Image 1 (cartoon, helix red, strand yellow):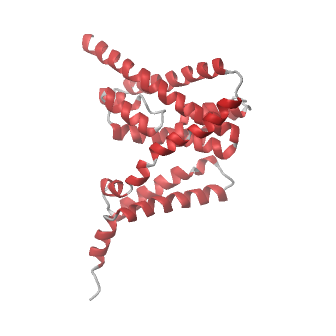
Image 2: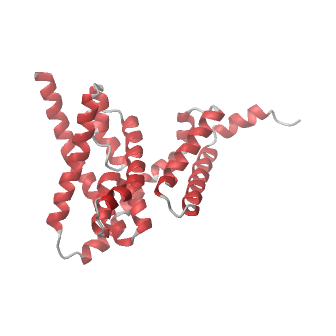
Image 3: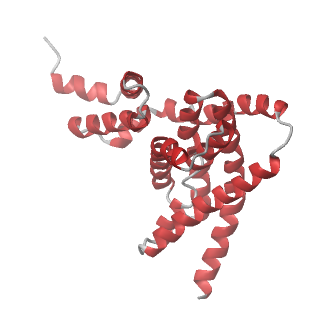
Length: 245
């Protein structure tokens, strides 16, 4: 007697291996399209994978949290992947002889602009306080951003979505913006991509140029530290101000 198709589908949809396989296949398809297009920024592999997985979940009727439970291994790897960025950073710091003032100035401007612009725009659109706090750490890598969001009263799940959107948009539009600004130094381009578009922007920078990838990795780490230190303090001050006004 052959098993009922519905029973097989229910079993497969709940299997961790199925969710993991779907995630990897979606990304491989995205990367294949990206390579075949001549590495067009608009065909970012992460963006393609997100679209394919979203369509698949919608068509199949599988709940997102069921999928997430199965794909948690990929989520777990975010932490080690972020730590692994220390390898190119360590090699970069051995060869750097100066320019630290310029780097920290760019870091301060980029970090503050990313957080303040998100908060101000959300506040002008009458977003709730929780939503505003969820958007503040959108420009740092996902594990750090979710921790910051939880600390200041935001929604970590909303923050994760905003982080991914920020990274994808930054990876797509970043090269065009830098070209329009006539920034040709790979060091500056990589650092800008790392500050503005965290891990996804760094992956894009690594694919383009080794030096850009190293500076982008440095930017991700420094921006994560700066944001983790400053936003909780700023959030507490903002909540105190709201409470007294």
